[in-house]
Image (cartoon, rainbow, N blue to C red; front, side):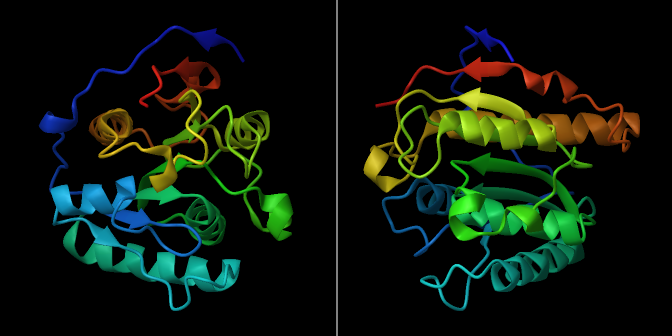
Length: 223
């Protein structure tokens, strides 16, 4: 992997989700409070839906993945291409578990600060191969819950574009990100790749427009 000096433009104000896609946010342990960027995004885009858990304090991967599955099924009823999952922390693991069980209906995923699978004893339940849809993995250099190198190692297995966001801790409400426009720019990039893949009829995991994601794109930290 190589680092680049690429910075992301602030395109948040122009972010548009095509009608054939439904955005689902997938929070982590204890959910995302009002100061979290996921909650702020939901306020900015009221058509987006949140994957709710029965018990936010119990990180059960099978139960959480089941809720992701239910959300994806609902998304498919209103959006022809299915769901774009915007996941954080343990929500990333739930998203990936569902992708391993059944990727149908998942158009793409933005994986932000994934939780460490080994800390929860669930590594064997996650995919260890390139996923059949585009993914972007954003990780911080000083995340207390998952070393960036470990996150990037997993992301390489999944075929993700790897994004170094700088020193933003666990990329949560404590990081002081506000609406996190750089994150919205990442989501914009992901949506464009999903749309381009659909336009070209590209569905194969062996020849995808996001294979260049083995490079690590470094963003300017938003503090």
